[in-house]
Length: 441
Image 1: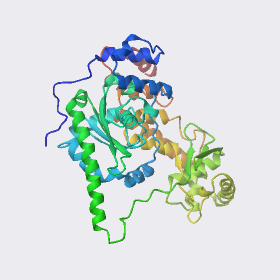
Image 2 (image 1 turned 120 degrees about the vertical axis):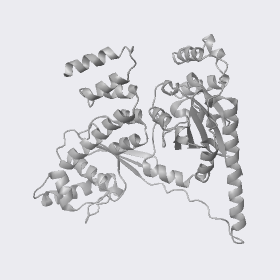
Image 3 (image 1 turned 60 degrees about the vertical axis):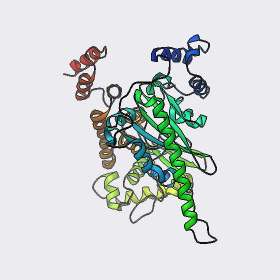
Image 4 (image 1 turned 180 degrees about the vertical axis):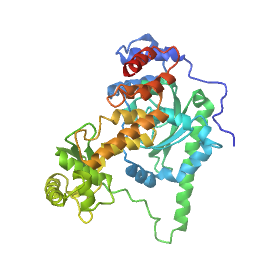
């Protein structure tokens, strides 16, 4: 089947990109009375104002608030999971990997649950945080089709420079909300992102028609379920996931880790000692559990560490009983009583989703940099290597340059040479990169 996104005569909003770019610059500088703003579409101007009122950063990366486990559970529970195959069929027919676009399906809050489509486009849009689990509401990124469609409860098209966030301005997008067919409350949003072909009237009609088709299919599915249910009994409803405390250990760039506990909307933050951070990190890394001998070797090294380990585990248990009872470790094997995320694992998850720029921003330094625990040293190296290799293999030159400006990449000649090879021949950045390479030689 032919792709509906094949190039055609471009039909874009009536004003030039340059005009909108200049109007945007004046607006974010506070010149709300600039006459050029009158030439910007009304829905865009209004969204810019909302974005400014919400203090949205013009180059802010969207927060990625769902861990892989939470994302999978949210997908499974969400009503639009029943329609994902229909969405793929209608919006990504044929070879979706070379369609030139990505499609996204988000929930009613603007969090993206599925992002699929062209591999090259996904890699590029991933750099701006357009990945599963990211918040693309207007509150998070300002004017963009997914969030603005949810805000206005109607389909919208946002063209290039009309985006409030400069990182998103290379792209155009069309999105439409999807409603519950009976209550009409918003269930989520579907979005198509790509080049100029995404903002034609035909594209908006197709995305709108897909949203209506999904609503019709959801209604038919419910009617069939009711017809098949035994007399006097209603079909089973999805159960909402239970709310449990979330625990995060922050170890990137920190010698004394922070343990964050979010329970019932209330967050507490506690600093933990280096030794307790090492133990918690190893238990979070080995979720299946480890023996006393294995844990001792990971934290203390080879040798007679059993007595020292047992004494330290007693102290760790007493500490956790006060600040995070759900995490108190079990023994035989040693394992945490509840789920513990780490900012290092979250960063690795962002890399897996293709969110290279967001992952780099999340990498605040090496894992527990002063720790000499063997297991920590091994994990520290693995995290740093994963970041470097992912950026060198897939990231854009802008992200790679940002990595070269960090402590991790500053003296990496291979990274600098790759940046040089990716920069345009007349780029003013080339001279600085050449000078840095020469200093390293």
